[in-house]
Length: 205
Ligand code: 5GP
Image (cartoon, rainbow, N blue to C red):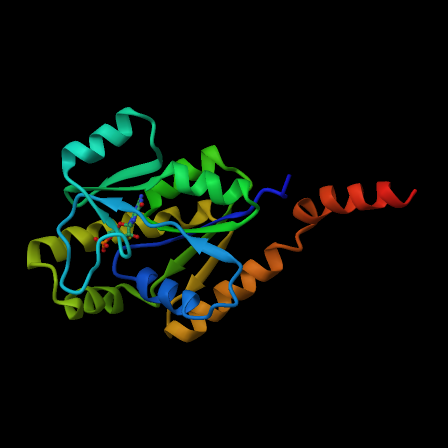
């Protein structure tokens, strides 16, 4: 049986640029990990594609998945559901592939409980003014939603202490590079490396 893959969780406040950084990481095909596409009940933004950016579903469909234990984690975020379908993640991990999730903090904390040996990375803005500006520049949210997202962001930054690594998103290519470096190093952490290595040593005795 293949060695079970590593679960990599990238999280951080909305608008910090998780999606952009994630796309930068995945623009290189030398990655040895797969992206888990989330499910959401929010409206599709212009340019978003169903099955690529998200699985866009109705509230009823999402609640059915929850009832059938189909979600690894989920959260209600600014009036919508967002969640990670469990089946794909398990299949990939069982096949020995590392899986990358890009999710908000409440969901990440559920994953932390269920998968304590995951790798948890917090992407954070250089400062809050910059974060507000980024949400405004995206041009997809009205003022009330922007204010809700900013309030939420302050609470979310408090959660950083529960993560393994923090990466400041000052420039997207730099942040992406730092995350790739963290993932590379994490694969060589003794607790991940030793079990298999011991088996190998056993073989040559
Ligand atoms: P947006 O509406 O900007 O695409 O996403 C809003 C927030 O939901 C972002 O912080 C995003 O990372 C988060 N998010 C996206 N997918 C998931 C998911 O599957 N689970 C959770 N918990 N959060 C998610």
